[in-house]
Length: 257
Image 1: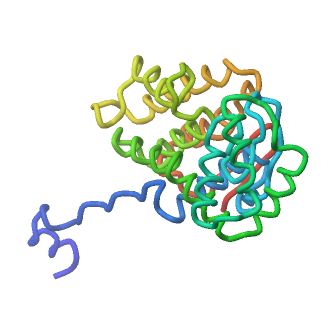
Image 2 (image 1 turned 30 degrees about the horizontal axis):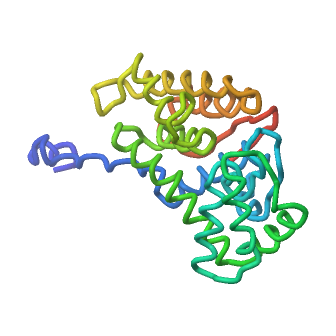
């Protein structure tokens, strides 16, 4: 009878299956893309796994910044990471710095950390247990909350990534530039899909709010990780963050095929 005639017999309700939902950012392939995107901004490299050993003071008032997601000695997340590592592996090379990390929390001080903390961090980064601790703290503090909120707002992978990148840089404290404050600022002008809004319109509002937050701090005032990366994907309508992806950060070009 032919395909067209058979479709007529089946009727419209059974002729086509509903399209499968596109994978979220927690899909393994999408998560790998997210790690590379953040690494391009944080470390000027797509090789995010090479960043377990990264550590330096970037003079942003947060003390040492280190690891795959920029754990900071001055913001508490580095302390939590080293505590987790020590809980899992007592006597590790970083355990002796726990008292100093507690003292410098909330400051940019290196007191009790210098001169050997950076070298010991790099030594610890060779340990798969420390690498796993970094992965787990990244997920607990940053990735999982961002994806959870993104899905609750009805956002696809690009929106979930915009949330993730924001929480990585700004944290989710109570200040005006934290992730939750950025989201509230966006909600003043647009609704997310879960509230009946247009996804692209809402994401533009969120990125506007993110840029405002970045410009409140000199260390984060270069907004290219939004302007020439996330905005590019949004203008292309790539809400599912599907490769190929081409973007720039700080003038450097990157590609994921």
